[in-house]
Length: 112
Length: 405
Image (cartoon, rainbow over all chains, first blue to last red; front, side, top):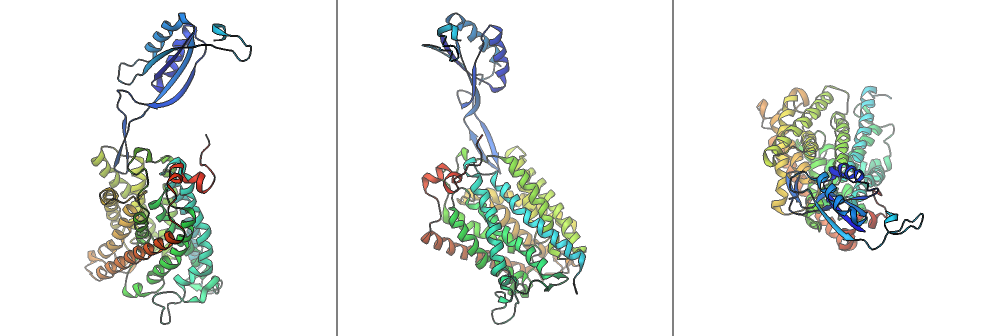
């Protein structure tokens, strides 16, 4: 099993969710994050004073998949989240050691 | 009801309620401009003034400001005839029951110290503010109100201030400047994280202030008459013009027109026209409002160059505006509206009194507030500890948070 973490543009969440559903991935977690990479932040102006805000709002989604789904999931996220502009985000994949469904006690890929 | 005009009385009572409403409006206006961790402490400073100053005004403030201007000290401070509102019920002020006048003036005494709180946002101890606000109303506001509105020495000199350019805005802003300097900058001053947390609150507060300002300015005619209508119109026109020129200045300076700019420009127009509202024509008010938006925009930018943290721009908006509006009377006053003539009618009579009045009020308030702040700092401490400031004043000073989302 692998855990895929993707940092995406906030407005791409629905596209990414649908792309993952379409290849049979049945659950995910999303939360709001702030960060920066190559994309520059933005400027805010209050009463003539300009403030540069480096940290840009993004969404981070997490999904744990079986090994044979990793390539498909990464591809689905990449295609759905892409706008071809700087700031589209990144995908990181890690080994997931175990998974347990709390309600039934199922373990491993059956718990996903 | 002998000697009482029912229309005037009704108008002034409604105006009193309008002016009271400005203080919670100010709390929203300021509250939106601080960070989430300080929103309650900011709003509390205004709301608390309603509690303390009402009691202070009833017991002694009113009589110090508007007691008889007779006897050896009468030019400087009101006589003690009305301690505890003694003789107020049944008394007369012009065509009003004295009680209507006294409670109307109470609302001015509340909002004036509340205005200065923007200068020391996010770092003043609550207890120190409680002490300062009471001392300030007794030692600065009441005497200055007496000098200009209570028949004191500046009134005798011919100083004109219709609704409080000097008594309210300049006096509060001078105190605000002293406080900003004595307290020093916020730890995070200059850091982007210090930006306003909720400008929708600030816009709502602006609307409430604007609404209440009709009671503030038009009500200051103390009668439902032509002068009140002139002040009402001047108020609306100057607020609108102040908004427009602020946005223009901002558009050319930064490339954007902002909602905070619209709100601030309107308040700048309102504050600036306050002293002149009962003396100038609608077109005069337009000129004042247009100057206010541009002048206050520039004055707000000045603080970074001068190096003090007037956090919410009390000096740049109320100080610059209050002084400019007071001096503008000497130029734009129209005899047919307020009974005095400015330069546009060929009279130079107001120039010297307005300059003297401004210099006296600003110097007196700045100096005495400075002394009060130093004294409070010595005895009680003024500023919260560093870790408290980092944590935020809501949870540390008041044991609450504004938001639990």
